[in-house]
Structures are given as structure tokens and as C-alpha cells.
Length: 190
Image (cartoon, rainbow, N blue to C red; front, top):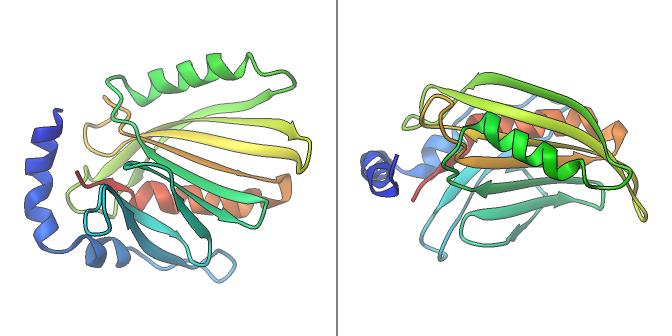
């Protein structure tokens, strides 16, 4: 799908307000982090990517489509609108091939799935493929990372987004919840 077509699809939905739509997407459990709407883009007044992220996590905008959320030195969520011309499955294959070159890295699993989207103008279901891996960071010790490629519009034909969570082994329950929430609420706005 061309970006101009995507823009036309989203134009009507934006009139209703991105913040109200994404912010209204479900409550989290008491054990999980609470979430808040976050949007970033080319300027303070222009949103390119929107989702619900954990409240209180520090946000850093990397570029127009990429942002990173961190909680202390242990937990992180990175979101990047990549607009790949290949499927999420193909993106995971590429990422896995790259990772195999990293010394000491271990691929833990490859998986895929479908989850409902809470964003009205996205497809009703988000198709995704994941690679989960571990490596040792000298300062922080053993890290577990999941990189997910998601298609929010075309039923699994194009990887529009890359979502990555990372943390310690004991952070996995929180990180799984953060990744689930991000996948269900993320959208590319324009």
C-alpha cells in the first residue's frame, strides 16, 4: 500500500482524534504497568506514530517514526515505523540472519501470531512474527530481547512496524505485557 493511500485511509479517522481513540483502549491489570497514550512525529503538532506505552517510562524520540521508552537501566520498548515492502515473516528471517553473526547471542524462539487491534482504522487484527534472543551486556548482565514485526493494515503482507522489548530474565512478564499492549494499540498516522 502506498503512503498516499495510507494517508487517505487515515484522514477520516484522524478527525475523530488519535488521542481519544488510542487512549481508550482497555485497562491493564494491577500487576502490569499502567499505560498512557503517546504520539510522536515530525513536529510537536504532527503525529506519525501513536500507541499506548507504560506510564512513567522515559521517552526519547529517535526520528520521525522511531521512539524508545526506558524504565531504569533494565526495561525498554523501541517502536519504529519501517514501512517494509516485505512481510513480517521475511523481516524476521532477515533479523535472525543478522543476529546469528553476533558473538555469544542465542536465538531462543521464532514465533508468530495474530492479535486484535484496538485502533479503528487499522485492520481488525495485527499479524506479527517474532524473534526472541538473549545476549550478555557487560554492564547489565544477561538480556532477553523480543523483536516483533507487525502488519497493522494488510493482513500479514507488509511489515509496517518493528517493536522491540528488552530486559532481564526476571522482567519477562512485564516485557511480554508491554509488547502485547504496544502491538494492539500501535498505529502509523502519516
